[in-house]
Image (cartoon, rainbow over the protein chains, first blue to last red):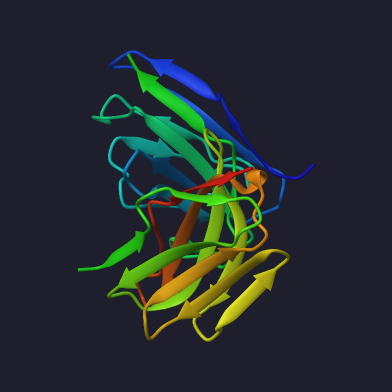
Length: 117
Length: 113
């Protein structure tokens, strides 16, 4: 079935460690996005990519890094520079992108919950 | 200031009734507005999109309205079922040069049997 796969679903990290969250899609979508979801806050955009080998910072990119070497894959690294990394991370894709927004429906993965110990 | 607001309090209704959820916005020029469903611990799932020049959209038991004068979208679930219990998110695409998707906090809906 087509969709977006995020892994791992749960991840624990010690302070000072970098961790990488995986996001793979087989929908042949051009655009991919990383969001962070915290209680009491709406989804916040971390990074987005409209095309392979190109990506842009979202609203809260500090302490994060991404790559888009393949159309299907958009991994997110949470670095030790991210001051408050404990959160629920959501990867999404859309057929096309228009800047930081999709041109329509967003398809989301199941999310990755990161906890810093 | 720019805001997008959804009912902050959880909505509890009886099975079979119509659930109505609200999404209000201030100081945005929406190109369209989307509604998503999110279950606990899972990613949001797209339900409906309504454009700024559309008044109403329907899909099975779901109906969305968009009033750009009132700056409000209403999301209705008719003949509600316990399986409709979830959090519903609205997201607005701001038009213009700064095209970005702005998300509400969501409204939790509980449908009681």
